[in-house]
Image (tube, rainbow, N blue to C red; front, side, top):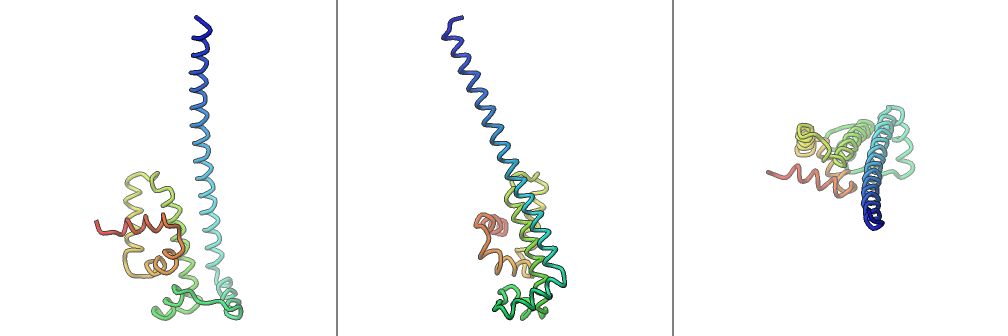
Length: 162
């Protein structure tokens, strides 16, 4: 075997090792993003639970008005059209917000869902945001104006007539 042949074999082995390392780095990066997303989702759930506490709602309401806090279109509609009190409307806002945050976390990883779960997830989107009600109102007034365009595009595609 000549030195040239040995060199060629060494280059092939180096290229294979580099390919393997790059694949490992890519997988590690994907796992890291998924862990970060999961941690964020758990933190959002904990914050939503805190915001749903009756004492927190009362304190927020008491502090907001003197500080010039304005009622969001979502809360205003719940109070004006549904007859909810401010406390009840705030509670519904945090529930709808927690549901939306869950939807967004799932949308970010929707390609990894097994087909049966994807159908179930899309059906839930249609039921919640495709029909009149609290969740549709939240989607139109709170989510759509502020959410990431990819999340809105996904929901709009699911809601589009087939």
